[in-house]
Image (cartoon, rainbow, N blue to C red; front, side, top):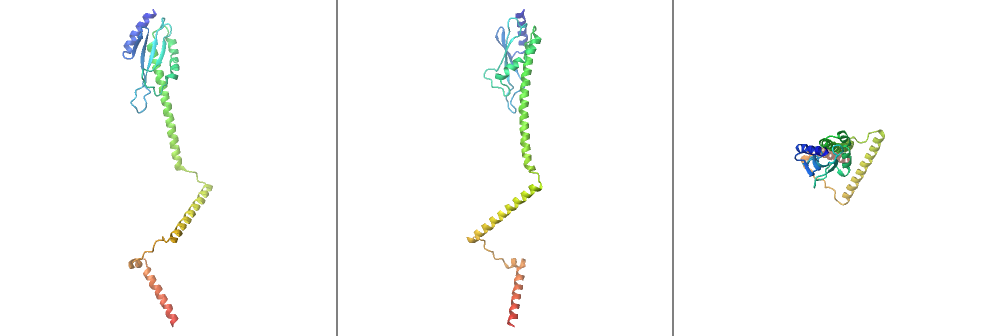
Length: 225
């Protein structure tokens, strides 16, 4: 009775998974599980495909099938899945489904449940990575905004700033005076350029010179008299 049910189920599975199922022998086969999540964001990578190996025991479906989960040969390691640690929990997640379906053909139900569990696990990890990126971006934005807010101004902080500002100005003035003195000592000062008569007139300097000369002449005249 068990063997007849196994053959019948195998034929049904062949019609459901014509391109995904591969026989190993009369009582075992592999089904490719094509997930919908797990491709790296922004890349052309395909979601991971896993292989579920099914082995019928003699009394299946009255006893559970033997199951294993693996990657296809030469397949790249999925970005958000590690079978070295995830295989056990994923297969264990089928225990309740197996228990509920003992005595009936259950492989299609197991394939559906396992695929959903894999996709759920991958989706959780993608969401976790995205949440970490969002948190990092928020922290970076907060640090950037803090540069524009600066320190809260109080009387004490203002007095400290003013004292520091005054010292800075004094230091700059002392440096400027020192440099000017060095330049004069080296004869490096700029020569005063001689202005034209028009420039003297426009600046009101010609009238001033004439007035001063007239005043001096008047003083001299008084002395002679």
